[in-house]
Length: 81
Length: 144
Image 1 (tube, chains in turn orange, red):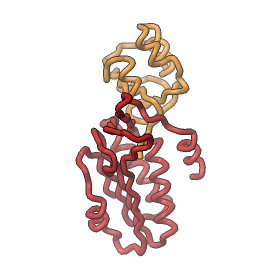
Image 2 (cartoon, rainbow over the protein chains, first blue to last red):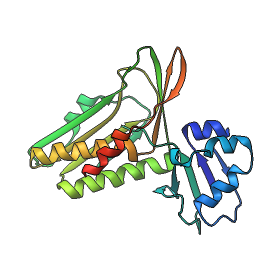
Image 3 (tube, rainbow over the protein chains, first blue to last red):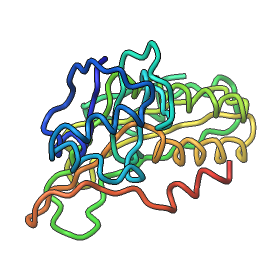
């Protein structure tokens, strides 16, 4: 699936998006998998309460299923307007 | 419904004049400008999620249309590099009654603030800083 990062999440991880092959069943499991990778992921995902997630371009939750999902995006709370 | 996500500057006056109320008696507009809160703002960079932004704005606008029976709604939101005092975004609502037009515009603003995928980064002489959302922004959604 395509995993996309925005704002300081993108800056901490050091890339805007990447293709990831995963067996994670939920967003939370994917986060655990990413955190275990490298320090820069740990830095980005250290405080989940500071993050929001979109699954296939819809705002979602960390317990959301990843079944048939094509894109997951991680970002800080939005600051539009 | 007219939803635009764009980099280019827009003219709020021209947008208002071009906004068709479709026979409604009340039009309300709001324009948000780049604010230099702390002084010394050199640039505001607005990042967004292209694959999601327009869809999210349409959903928010459709919700406003349904709740207040709007005869037209306009949302313009910019991204990219902006200077102080430049317009960032604009909403316009048209309805038979002013209360509905005002309320719908406020609703749109509240939702655009924390449910549309934009992120603002300020650059000053001291460096770069991501603008953080506030508890107040989130609280504002509860009244709807």
